[in-house]
Length: 227
Image (tube, rainbow, N blue to C red):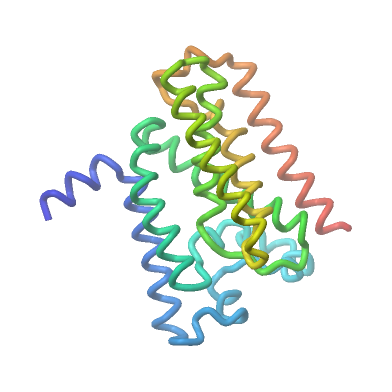
């Protein structure tokens, strides 16, 4: 127990997100049993269903909730353990608050792009957010020109590309959500850069990337709902 407390105090964002993700997954089964992953039950638990958002634009919360809903055991376990094992490393770099912001905002951006590209999609899963934190790490080296971060950034860029190639052979996987998550992380790396790298990134860069994030996200939502 003491070891977990130490781990939790060191990585509060990662473990809080993991606990929420686990709690939602278990709740799906407690509520619906073996029918937990049926489309209607996923929708009731917060999955993104495009036609609902088009008909009810006030349901923008559905761009957030899919981050914590999963479609099956394999889907859940892969994302859950990726969050714990890789999330801790990235939280160490960005700090807890910045890591949390990137995780949630890039996940939202991934859901928005998936909604924009496929308006009738049913979407759930933390992979949009995971691709976001990978994208943020990949972008740090480019932004700061720091050799250490450039080396790590290349590894994460390769990880993203490899996963996207694999996605091409898995039609059931929401590739647009993954692409959107990665793009969201790239755009958020500057405004939420680690404290130790703040001086390497200009205020204009920070503002520009964040404005691009906000404007592109709003445009995709409006164009999809109005179109």
